[in-house]
Length: 168
Image (cartoon, one colour):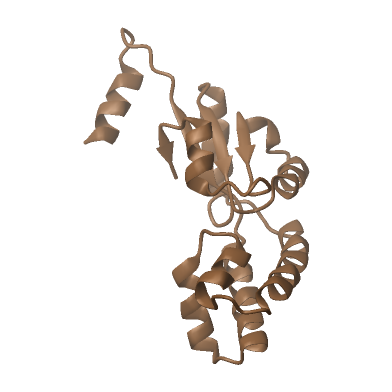
């Protein structure tokens, strides 16, 4: 497999390989997905008058995009979308301030940092918020760089900018 070949190349002293890894933020570095899912589900139920199970299904089907884009996909041309997304982002900021990093993520980041891997963070979360959270968690120095959606870049565009070998 490609992963086995990459691992072999890393261990082979005659081959010089610079590895780079791109990670998602929510649900990979910090354990935020359960609380963000509940928040989104509640807002969709409240503002669009649909039942909880349907709201959850809609949200899960569009995870990975900024919330406003998710709402636009679920409820095209709905005038409520912008207001609901703004409410989501205000509450998301407060929730993320209390989020906890995964222990395994910290261990992996420390390992990659020690072994001089280039590690990038790609996210639909705003870059300034990611910076604050990573600084508070004392993880910011473990990343080569990080991207958020403040420029409208989706994760595919962020990955191209990072030139990462692997995306996790």
